[in-house]
Amino acid sequence: MNGKVTLIVVSLLLIATGCQEQQSASTAVDQEAPQSLSFTVVNPLQVDRVDEALVLSVDALCQQAPDFNPQGFYAVADGVEIPSQALDENGEGQPDKVVLLLDIAAGATQQITLHYHPTAVVERSYPQRTQAELSHKFGGHWEGREYQEGHFENVQFLRCPPEHTDHSGFIRYEGPGWESDLVGYRFYLDWRNAIDIFGKKTTKMVLQDVGLDGLDSYHEMSDWGADILKVGDSLGIGSMGYWTGSKVERVAETEGLLSRIVASGPIWSQIQTIYVGWSVPGLKMELIDDLTIHAGTRMSTHNLRVQGGGDNLCTGIGKLEGATVLKSTPSRGTWGYLATYGKQTLFDDNLGMAVFYRKGDLLTVTEDDLNHVVVLKPKEGKLTYHFLAAWEQEPKGIKTQDAFVSYLNETLKRLNKPLEVQWSAN
Image 1 (spheres, rainbow, N blue to C red):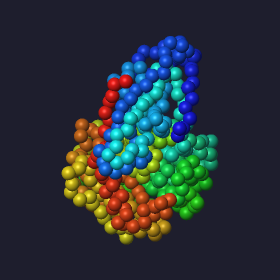
Image 2: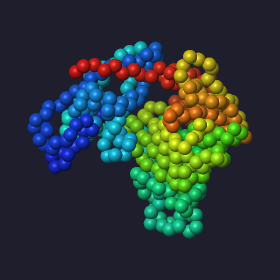
Image 3: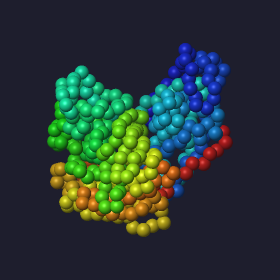
Image 4: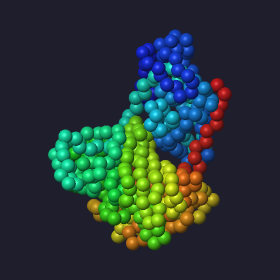
């Protein structure tokens, strides 16, 4: 097995299954045997898929097995346990999604079985391959817009205080961070709201050690890597904004910023940020952004919900000297990309950056003085897009433009041909 599964019987509290009215776990264990739910996953591509995340809603699973318990399961593929994780995305104290990490051969089908106990809890233990964190200072004090003294502690939730701005010293590395075993990212939880890149020279988790000794430390190359991108006033990589028709307006003017660590798990990490009263010329919006990453990938995903307009949302990549602009060729698929490649790091080495967008959401690909821009129109107030960074100093890093283009095209194939789930009777 790839992990250790332990069944814990909880007799003094009610275990929420999300699918049925609860009873005491001690009673249920006496009366109910472990159950199983099976289905088939199909890889429609003639390409092996490694570390592919499959996300299933608990509602969908409960339609197949009304007593399915997202707190009490483990997953098996073709007789071998695979990493899995439950998510409480809505923050209601009850898992509403399940993530599985699959390896599936080209053109293959794979039998998946979820073994679960309707009322008990199953502890799963797998290698930590993703992480998300948000850390700010305690025990100090504000002097104007700077936070003096104090020490950093990780938190699950933060409402930014009104004193906080860029370089306040209040939030460790200035905002939330998230990483996989291949790459790390952070975004500035202030008026800049731009995404930066932590290039990693190791597959180990590193964020817990970054920025403890101040802002300058992670801008210097270390054994684990460094902050490798100069963001300045640009979008950085994959940040959202609003297209005015001539330039990008970043998410700068808001009435409030709230950020929550939804998950920091072995195979999936997620950060949710709420932008209250985001103002751009002639418009005020409410924006909720869920940023996700899973094990074994460089790609991070934005799932955006917007109210109050915002038909001209945009994303993009900051313009940097020495970079070549790359665009996907017209195809019959659902997804396309805009990318750059070249010596565009703070260390004068090769970095590839890309944004993947649904072509049905696309209004235009354009630019302003600072950014290569993709303008997108949400559908029913929702928008999803992806971004990634590939640094040549990663373990097994991508070192040439041709290799990066091949990687982008392989990623595009996976997006255009997602895994297919076929339900089967138990």
